[in-house]
Length: 336
Length: 167
Image 1 (tube, one colour):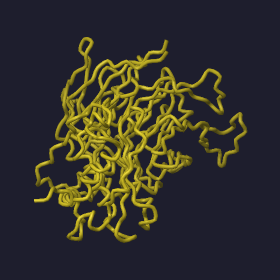
Image 2 (cartoon, chains in turn blue, green):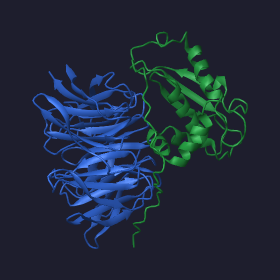
Image 3 (tube, rainbow over the protein chains, first blue to last red):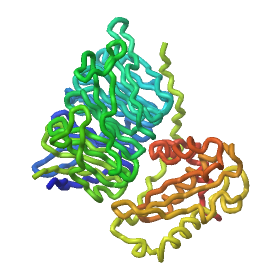
Image 4 (cartoon, chains in turn brown, purple):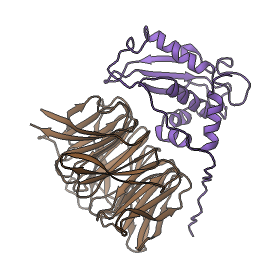
């Protein structure tokens, strides 16, 4: 029997809490939302409490926060059209750089695994790649205009500089830098969802991607690279991504977020029906046509829509989630 | 060359609006415990909220213009958590009505502010009643777009004016 046990319910935010992000070591996490503040939460003994509150960085909703791989920077994306980068050179987190360029709401921000690149996206349909050029200095490397609607989320491949974006245009796109001319280009379009793709998460290997959508399904995509064993034909030796599994019939409203645990391989989803669900790949799963079981349904996880779920990167099976009514919750997953 | 000029006007002249929280969030409550006799009673309650919304252009209410109507409100199967699910259909006065999105936004905000218990809302234009209905339906059911729209001072003022109580 699998269970998701509530460790603690954290209050302090007002209104919608849109996003939570773990520090890479999993001992601190950040949360943000409608109240335009970022809260940093840490554990004291057995209980979690607010350690720091970052204010005055943004004039409108903070949609997403992202911790850099080194843990020394936090980037925040806001509906005010800017992305702020906070660092703790002075001993405490301060905003020392603001990235401007998007025409309106910035919806997502993500650091590359090396920490040298940042990606942002927004309602202006564009995806931007920024390079860390020096202390408090960020240079725009590319503006990618390949989606034809609002871009909801960006996520980096876990080990290489490949970027993925999810959009209101129902597709996912992937990008990488062409080594010959240093130009970023779209190298793949993942088309199968029937409505907005809200979020996406790579597995540990980076060979698979899970996406979630307003069409109430989760899709698992697999990379078929050059010289693949399955005999999938490629043009120009560029990898292609195929949808190898669709999880439908489980979610009853829009699915806002999805997180793939790098240590257990479990997938958790955040749904507009207020429920958190956990999926596990079956033991007899075919690598090219994988199957997943719903192993836990946490009814009433939140009082309203679950907006975000994130597994603790330390692999301790903790999960943090947030919802509309100022709610942030920490859970512990166990499987007997 | 990439422009770093931000097109967003962010004059914060007004005091930011208070974030409204629902008073009653107990999800285990049945419709009866929430104070409704039955589905029909919930529909009538919702209709009462909607009928007085003012049209953004004309000096009439959505009821006068038959943009909203009682038969356009459906109580659907509740979620697994037993949260009531409501579908509201509305009928823009003309098929190319440029204010259809704003009306959808007014309907959603009015219901959210008026009800003091959780509810899931799906708002749709009456089938065939608008030339870009799919586009509008998608937009007015996207919570992120709604949240961002309500932070835009001009849009917010328009909504507030349309849904303000009489008197």
